[in-house]
Length: 116
Image (cartoon, rainbow, N blue to C red; front, side, top):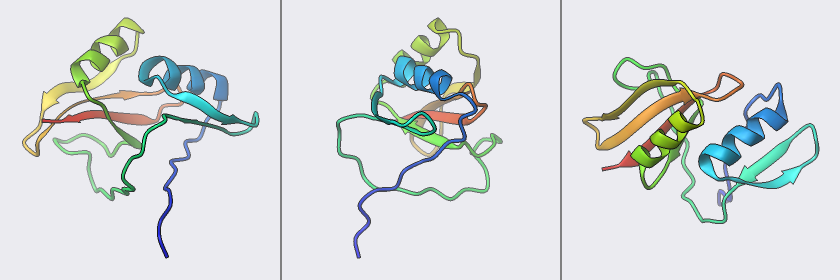
C-alpha cells in the first residue's frame, strides 16, 4: 500500500470567508467547490507528512496547520497588510525554521514557516 495524499479538513463555519483568507494570503486556487466543502490547492508536488505534537514549540499551542513558504517575512508583511493579527513571531527557532502564527477567520491556528 502507498499513501497517495493526506488532506487537512478544517471546520469552516463560512466557506466563502475561509476561501478568501487562503486565496488572498497564500495564493491558493479553488480546486473543487460543492458549497458544503471546498478544496483549495496549488499546482505543486509536496511530500506526504503528518505531524503529531504535544505543543507548538516555544510555549505556543499546537497549530491546526503548518504552511511552509519560500519567504516567511514577505508573507508576514502581506498578512499585516491584509489586517490579520499575528499571534507569534516572526521568530527564528532553534530547530531551524523562521515562523509566525495567526488565526484564520474560523479561529484555526496557522503556523507559517520557512526552513532556514
